[in-house]
Image (tube, rainbow, N blue to C red; front, side, top):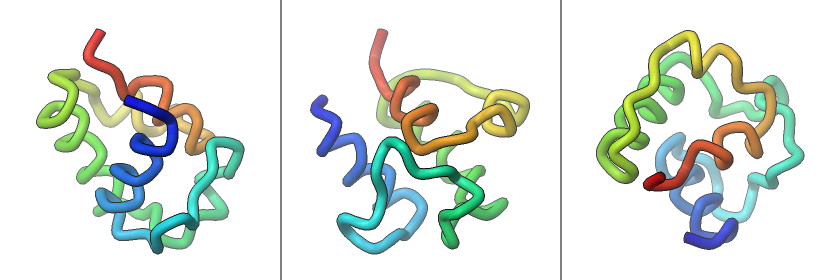
Length: 74
């Protein structure tokens, strides 16, 4: 999966405007990144990538790139 595809999936998951996210963006600056978005990311990681992550992992995310780094099937 390319970075562009990861960003599109993430934007869809947290209901952000298409093209609004970049890997360097701080999550504190992303208006749509709230508690519902965090839960959606946990579900998306398991459904799309077979990765189980917990709330502690999500709390450790600082940038969009941090989330993208875990978006793999490895």
